[in-house]
Image (cartoon, rainbow, N blue to C red):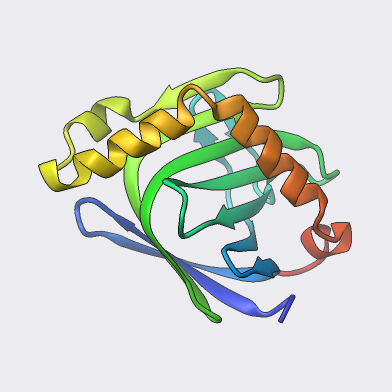
Length: 166
C-alpha cells in the first residue's frame, strides 16, 4: 500500500548491513520506489546534500543497479546516484540489495562522476562478473538511466515525496 513503511536493507561486499526506514511511493511487479529524507547533510562526489534532502530510491530485481534521485525541498533535482547492485529483492515490507561499490553520480547539470571504481576493482572475485555487468550498463548510459529515473520520480504523486514521512 502506498505510504506504508518499507525497510531498505543495503548490504556491502564486506558484510556490513545498513537499514533505512522508508515510505513506499510506488510499486509494480518488477520495480519499487521508496522515499527517505536525509537526517543530516552529506557529500557525494562533488555534490553537497543538505539535511532534509529527499531521496526517491528506485529498485529493480532484473537490473544491475539501483538508483537514488535526490531532490531539494522545492522538488528540484540535485542529482541521480546510480549504485552497482545485485541480489535485489522486493518484498512487501522490505527491499534488500547488495551494493557492489561502483557508483555513478549524474549531477543536475548533466555532469557524470564515476565513484568508488578503485574499490570495485578490488572487490572479491565472485563479485567481479556482476560489477562488470553494472559497469557496462551504467558508465556509457548514465545520462539516459538518470533521465529515466527522473521521469519515474515525476510520475509519483508530488504530495507523497514532499509530504511528511521518513
